[in-house]
Image 1 (spheres, protein in one colour):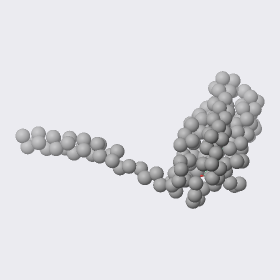
Image 2 (image 1 turned 30 degrees about the vertical axis):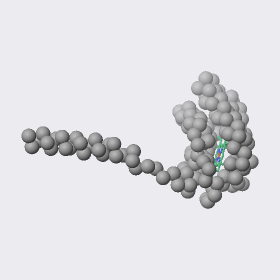
Image 3 (image 1 turned 120 degrees about the vertical axis):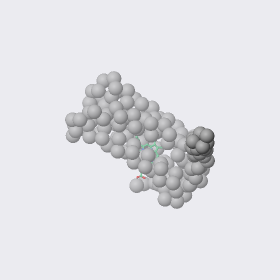
Image 4 (image 1 turned 90 degrees about the horizontal axis):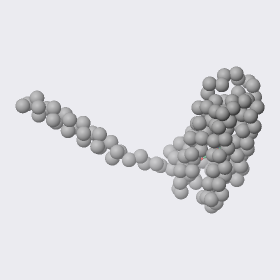
Amino acid sequence: MVRKNLLISTILALVLFIIGLPAVQAADEAKDVIKFRQNLMKGIGAHINNIAAVAKGKISFQGNLVSDAQGIVNGLATTGDLFPEGTEGGKTNALSSIWEDRAGFEKTLRESSEKAEQLLGVIQDSGDIKEIGVALGALGKSCGKCHEPYRKKM
Ligand code: HEC
């Protein structure tokens, strides 16, 4: 009986612990959101640089092309959520034009996402380095089309 009670209270404690976890709400403080999106953009930059190294013939290793391209697709898919109201100040290179012209920002984001998906498609379907280079160039341009009006000069 004592052992059974112990077991029940252990299970109960475990259940309460698991239920209690979501109660620890993330604070989403502006400075943390800014850091988070900068890290995401750095990641996208790292992915594109590695694809470029292959496309330029500097690196023969092609095993990461798909995951690098997928990383860009995934990153851009969440980018829109990472610029909420209240994150326009502080240590950010984001320009206030993002919040003044949200529709324009979202449009350039969609276009960039499309180019990233096209690059992923070319990598998966053809694997031809020349074609990858062309798709990569188009993607690179689309990054600039957002950075130009919506990001401080870095
Ligand atoms: C829809 C707009 C948009 C698109 C598309 C976009 N970016 Fe950015 N990017 C930004 C903004 C805004 C910042 C500044 C973020 C901040 O400082 O809060 C940024 C920052 C960066 C940074 C600097 C991160 C840091 O703080 O060190 C890199 C690198 C970067 N982007 C790479 C890319 C690449 C590569 C692409 C294309 C594959 C891309 N971005 C597409 C808007 C965009």
